[in-house]
Length: 297
Image (tube, rainbow, N blue to C red; front, side, top):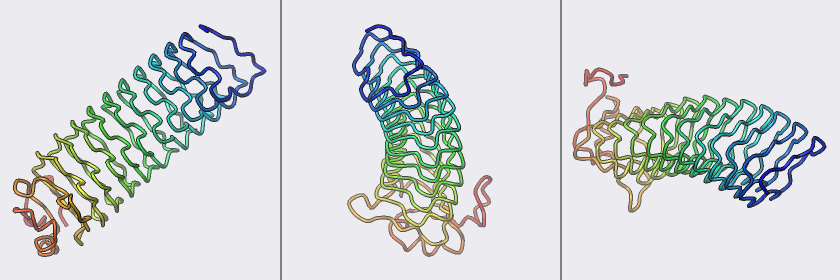
């Protein structure tokens, strides 16, 4: 099957409708269609582009799973849900627009989209779920809006080209391995809205040189910054030492001997006597540093 005409009478493209139609290179979805079901175009390995019309409200789970030639996607402005794994392993996908109508991007929605270089997440989205952009190795730019409150488990893990990211003040939780193995990430500012940094959240970020932790962080998970060997500066604005989960990976940092820890002046004694913060050799009160660019009380 190389091509097909879908008439305007069709309102639903059902589950697995064109599953593994490996010669299907193009298809026009008419404006009558409102729902594209689970796995509808999965493994259509010759499909190069797709326009999803404004009539469609839901892109189902695994709809375009493993469409390895799919290079561009235009998502209509009535879509509210991009299902779990909708574009998983679309390794040629370089461009996709996500309209403001979208409120839910499912887990694994774009994982292994290794050609995807940038993404704008609309301000209608509140959660970036588990593995949403996992192993998007070309992803260099991400716009996370102020509507997002949670960055989920492994959401950007192994995005090895991601050199910087702005986490908005709306985010309260950074999940397990959310940015692990982001090998180009040079610095991170964790805003004051964040209360929890998950286990291994920034582990293996080999280029990470500076970390700024906001004043509301109360919990830092196991190994959150482990194997980030080139960190030279850690600033923690929390007046009460964040609790660090104990266990084999109790040392949340690998740089206790080489990095300087900057903390609020009134809390310096607490940091010097609280594990694992007390492992830092160099602990400096923020008010006394006089260092340009360092936060002060």
